[in-house]
Length: 440
Image (cartoon, rainbow, N blue to C red):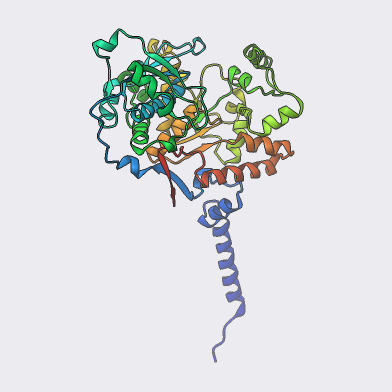
């Protein structure tokens, strides 16, 4: 008969149980990571990027593997695309203009960058982008010329302004007659278009122009590369919009801002008075009010972004209340702090914006507090390059949660869940014109 003691067996079982419990509850345990992800707890060490995505946006095969439709032997005339606004707005107009020119079987003249005095800008297309590279990359998609033929050169283009047209705007119906009559027109593309109605050869030309043909000039790319090298790695690029004009344009009011910020906003308002009462509440709940740097920092914390993260601040001049971010996230750098010299101080808005664009499409991760032209372009280019750590911070979710009185841990949990769902489904990663949904 075999005799054994119960006590040693009990101690062994208890020891094993405690050991397994320590493994399961360890912060580095994969079991706990899965639990944190599913329970959406911002208290854990897992960043938002650790969540498994279900959907990604990738360049559509019909564009990348497109067998080009031969260009017609005869062109219907020449189109110059007139682009207005900041760099990324002008880039959007250029992309649209290329698609329109191909749709109308026109030869594309090098675009004209028209900038309002507000932008303090004098850079033309050739000051920012490599012209020869653009022409080379568009070969087969559309004919591009640097100069007009002698019989056209002395003529001023007939201007066709489509910028205010919305809805189902038909360029063939509305613009082609002017092109055929005048042979040389300048075009301001419509702000809202139905590109899904384009034939694929026109859409392919638009996609090629936007994502494959625009390269910075050598000097600007060299300066951008120097900036990228100077940023501590790995790093998160944050596009933060809280300048006086941005806040004034939004017609939103904020409490607790410094007197200097309030004065700057009032000076920028002109006749755009802030909303008040119920209208102001509805406006804010619709996500129309820019996030402050402090609100941005709170959301980053809710997404478990460590406060020692290296952050490149992609922003224009005049950013207000920046201490609200840098008092919490202390490793924040800017282009003005990293680049010095006369060549940088002499840069205008477009060339400075190009630096931010270059850094953002090459950053380890990217977050934006707005969904403007730069953000759409950066997100799409990152998707094109296979970089999927991209997220837009939700002004609407933040306004909704704070309106209902959520604070502390409850607010953090709610913000995590809202942004986790956006990230998992790839929302905002790219626009569907040139990118297709890919389920993982």
